[in-house]
Amino acid sequence: MKILILGSKGQLGSEIKELAPLYKNIDFTFTDIEELDITNDASLKSFFGKNKFNCIVNCAAYTAVDKAESDKTQAVKLNVTAVKLLSEFASSQKALFVHISTDYVFDGKNYKPYLETDLTNPKSIYGKTKLDGEVEVIFNAQNAIIIRTSWLYSSFGNNFVKTIIKNAKEKGTLNVVSDQIGTPTYARDLAKSILDIVPSYKSSSKFEIFNYSNEGVASWYDFAKEITALAGIKCVINPIETKDYPFVVTRPPYSVLNKSKIKKTFGITIPYWKDSLNDCMLKLKEKGI
Image (tube, rainbow, N blue to C red):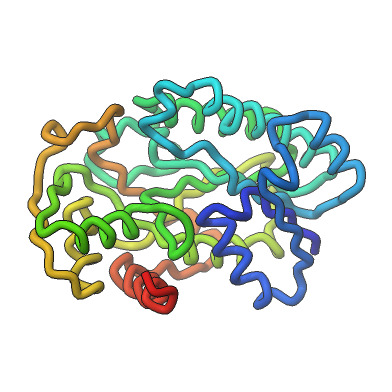
């Protein structure tokens, strides 16, 4: 099976690349912006004219949530235009298209974990462009999986875990939001699930949407407390309300995802968020972070 991984230098793409040697029956191709501009139709036409795949996994995205408000053109280019083009090329190759989306397609006003069928209502440019990207997949891909995830972190790239470690080491006190509730997701767990699912995936419908995050529920405050505890850093973490933090964009106050569908469909087991965080922290220590 030939699989193309787009956005291979990001958190999820990097985790897939590290896991790839374990999947002997898959022939991987990894690309990032240096090798392939996914927003350029001519570049994609040339690339897919020379290469054929059974599956295309799109890990590339514009993910700077606050910056997207003032950089809408680039956010649309990566999260919508590129996704439309990739969906079309995947269809022309009769390839399965796996697209990664986000909990930000919801407004966060739910009182129970979000199902894939719940009403979307994004409150940010980032969330709106990611939802528009989902729509492009639905309209243009012949065989697709959309995976919505939340609070992604990894031993690769920039993320909340690394930021907390850095700031906790430099400062004696941190203020962290405690009234936004969701679930941290270790990108390695998601990467493994994707690679386990894809080889045998068959669906009678044109597209399927699945939720994926680690198990359990936490606030950003809970997450930060666990990070510093595992890192052995002495730092006072103060819980604060969202209104007291200078966010540019309104974050979903509640974005817990219901994972019943993906677990039942593929028979996968999803790790608890604290266990996965511990695994990631061990990797960070190995890297001297």
